[in-house]
Structure formats: C-alpha cells, structure tokens
Length: 211
Ligand SMILES: [Zn+2]
Image (cartoon, rainbow, N blue to C red; front, side, top):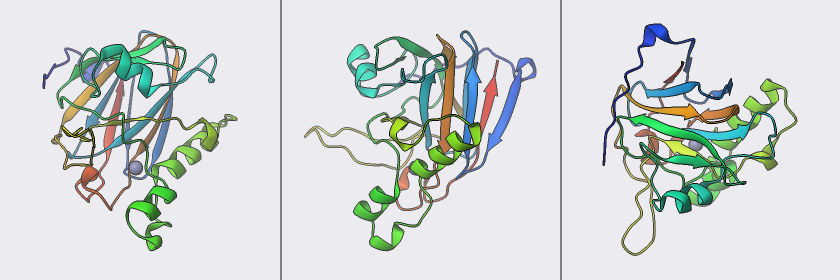
C-alpha cells in the first residue's frame, strides 16, 4: 500500500463541512476543484457516488474504474470512471491507502439478509442517499444509486475470489483527496452501520474540505 500526502493547506480551502455519522451530504464540485475527505476518528466508511453535474445519467461506474486500472482497490492515481468510461475524478492524495468499490451501500434489505430480520429498520446508506437527494431538490431517487465507493472501508479480496468486510485500516486524521476532472455532483452517506466492523461498530463524523 502506498501513502501520498497532500500539499494543500486548510487555511486556503473555500469550503469545509463536518458530516455526522448517519447524515448525508451533497456538493457541486467544479472541474479542477479538489475534495478532501478526512476520517476524523478513524475506521469510518464514507459511501460516495458521483454524477456528471451537466448530465446526471452519466455517473460513477465501479467496473469501468476497476478494469481501467486493473486493480480492485482505490488509492492514489486511481481514475474514477463513469458509465461512459470518462474520467470523472482522480485520486491525488491518500494517507489511508485502500478504499473499497465492491461492497456497495448498506440497505434495509442487506441489513435483513446479512444480519437479522429485526435489523431491517436500522438506518442504512441507501435511505441516507435518498434523503440527501430529496434535500438537494433533484429528480434522482433510489434508481440512481449505483454501486458506489466506500472510502476508508476495508473489503479485501481473498485468494479464492471471495471478499468480506474487515476491520478498517484507517486511523484518526487519515484522508483521501480527489480532483474533479469534470463538474460533478458528490453524493455522500456517512455510513451508520452498526452490524459489521466497517465502522468499528462505532460510526463517527468525517470532514469535507474543498479547494
Ligand atoms: Zn452504510
């Protein structure tokens, strides 16, 4: 795993926001702007989808991203690709070293299937995505929630081809930085999941910083 530090200074940022666990966040990132996501307390999972701001039918595509770089993990240098195979953003700094784009977002259905029937009513990223889209005021809904990125989440692929959710590799203050290569809408659910170790059973806030 490689670690790449950023030279950007927080005092030069144009916007910062703290996103509590279980909250959504949306932002219109202009081409050339940089978004840093900081894992304030460590071991958090930050579920994220990107849309072309001019044409939201173009959106993040995990398979094109994996095939494009011949690597299942996201880290410095990864070109985040769309369903039209255009590069939407580039990972330009990363002090965590590994991010997932296989595990997708938690939902009431996955809570039920993976854990127990009575977990159905717990908060989930799919519902947080939906609320963030409604709050933003666009016409997107559940059908627009494609397989996403889970920043800071550790989902290793085993030699036999399976994968599982593992205890996180991230620590307090670790960050990942993305440069927008087109105008993008950023949709985030700061994961509230309590039933697997992706958040160390203790979901915590993250910070968004934009230059
Ligand atoms: Zn989640």
